[in-house]
Amino acid sequence: MQEETRAIMSGLVGDGALLLSTPFQSTLFVPPFSELNIFAWQMDGDTILFDTFARFSSFAARNEISLRIDKEQITQFLASDRMNTKQTVFSGLVEIEHGCSLTVLADDRGASLVEVNHLPDLLCERSLTPMSGSDAAEEIRALTLEAIQFKASHDTVGIATSGGFDSSLIALLYGRAFPEKALHLYHVYSSRVRGLNEIEYFNDVRQRLSSHVTWLDAETTRDVQLDFPNMAPGFRPHMVAGWYERNWKMYAAAKQDGVSVILNGDGGDQLMLCLDEMSLAREFHKEGTPLLRSVVNEAILKQSSVWQVTHNWLAGKSDDYMSKWIHFDADNIEKVKPFLKLKALFPRRIFRDADRYENLSVSRQHQVCTLNDAKYNSLAAALGVCERKPFLYWPLVRFCVLCPRQILLAGGRERGLFRSAFSDTLPRSIANRVGKSGDVDVVQLFDYATVKKRVLASHTLADYIELDAVSTIDPHNLTDEIAGFLMRCATVDAYLKTI
Image 1: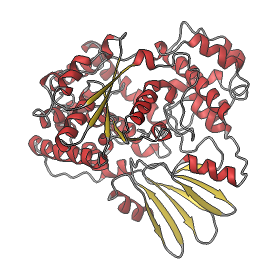
Image 2: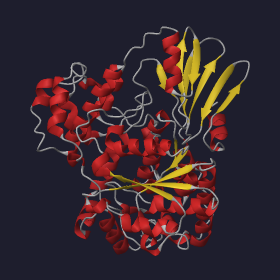
Image 3: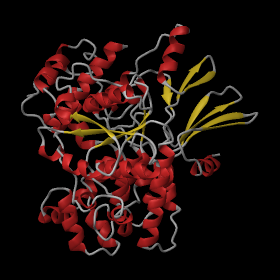
Image 4: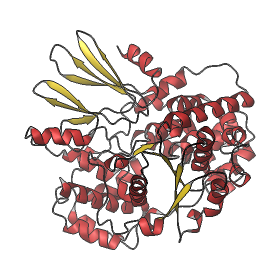
């Protein structure tokens, strides 16, 4: 059955799901990167499916079902937002993960989850047919435009823009594909952080479009005290929404404008280049790219020195970091473990089939895992807006994962294939820019002194955290890991109080 499942799902694309039934079983297939969030609930021997958490919540209320909180899932989230969170916060309610299937047997033996993770299988089936850079560029052009057309098939569309490569490309391709449609642009910038102030880049894009612009300053839309973090009801996203309060403002503005679909550039980084602590130089060099160019390019991307990149590569530090990341978020968990009561839960694998990734090269491991971990935030749906991500269009993902690295990154130039493919589409300022914009460090995001006081005073968190240990945290001298832990605590506290 597993081989047949892979064969069926490898051909599935789009945002739906497929339900197959025989006299002996019923199987629901959720394609990779589907934009459906499907929940399964077992009751009295039956498996009931819901396409939104709101429908499940209404069903539970009508049937007077007493829902039980799963403490392990909450503790897992407090430890790391990278952990495998296929379960919801409620015991017995499971979300069918993208790229997985749920089979219900007809003989009342219950339901069983069959995980089908395509990306490693696709790598194993990689074609050995030589590919030229020009052929790859032509294919990328066609697939990216197809993704825009597929994801933006509604009448009123908005685009979240930042002045960066990904969102700029989406906006301009949309304008080319739908020149007659009205377009709303929601531009996120920062009036305080220079690296986030990309209005000049954005202006080079919007002057080519007929559009309405809504400006969103991250410094005025961020809830710095996390007074009321906006979390999805199912407690499902791998990143809490409190981190992105500005997105909530964007969704609200889109709803007011009558926008039904928001497009954003999520997933673009993972398709076009790998951004983490892994070494790009090792794989580039193996595939014939000049080593010096690879090292210099990696240093620019990571805002590091050439000597540091070379040292990390020769010492194998990047490989070791990636190995720990692939199996469990070791560094993060070890630093926050003293603050958790249920310590025996860890370490726990990020991916249940992590062993299948071991034979992949470091940068391919990273690309596969970050793409596979690109969960869909269901916050927009709570306001009646559908958020869609063209760079996570399955045919495009499949091509980029299989594309040789020396072609995808054009001999060491980040986003090289996309730059060459869309040189006639993007303004020169964006097509030729090097690196990415800056961002606000985690320790600067919130007022952690206020957050810590609320965490210590919370009765709902007392079952999950060691209060004495948390009281020793210095909110003015935090590491990224501890700052993230306090943020997750405040978000969980706010969430638990709502249920």
